[in-house]
Length: 329
Ligand SMILES: [Zn+2]
Image 1 (spheres, helix red, strand yellow):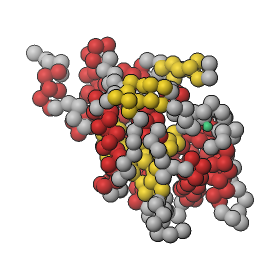
Image 2 (cartoon, protein in one colour; image 1 turned 60 degrees about the horizontal axis):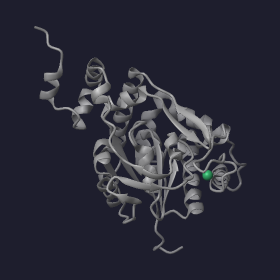
Image 3 (cartoon, protein in one colour; image 1 turned 180 degrees about the horizontal axis):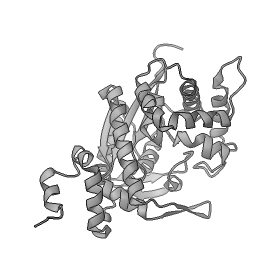
């Protein structure tokens, strides 16, 4: 190996579900030299234990991309060690996901040595998986949409990986409204539906994800971080994708057929929103249905719960908010 060999770049997309993260990853995955891995954090539970289909329609153990990646990741324990099994990896993931541990994982993103076995195992497994995925697909840039900031923290600490974060935020009122409606997709002739979530659960996830993202941001160099609003992406998708390519320092050619339309092909995205199975010509438009269909009282509840963050992300200004509050006279 010579010094001119380019290092692998990994882009973590961080944000809550229904914020356009899956379609964005699909668009980036179409660029020559880019590959979208999907939500890598679900590889072990959904992909290996439950055998849910990859974007190509095969279960990961039968998929030409994932079966060698899984073998490599399991042998990340080291040459003289017996390979890990999926059950051990899932147990480590569960340990890192425990509430008191999440902060520690987020703060480990700066790459410091951590004497903590589950974290060491997940760093080794994640690193082996992403490198094997890049080898099999020939990618120089791998896009992960695990979405939780703590999963991005694992990538940030990997040796030999140039890591970037795209933080996508969507108006919490729109996210709440979107999660109230079931989303249906047809996968290999079978109809699948994404479940719904209630207002308090969605608001809690939105706040937790945003706060965790801010903690992660404080651990990483600013030159590796891009904050983007879903609404800005949906309004000018091509401009938004160019901004991401600038962050990565990679002048790829995204699959736009016009300013709002992309051409998507079958992929090997391993888990995530069922829209990963969407192929063909896809038009990107902001879904602003909540403005007409969400009860004003619910909008106000969401605003009340998320106000400091809504202000931070420019979804409200203090004067407008005062005007919209129910008045007591
Ligand atoms: Zn596949």
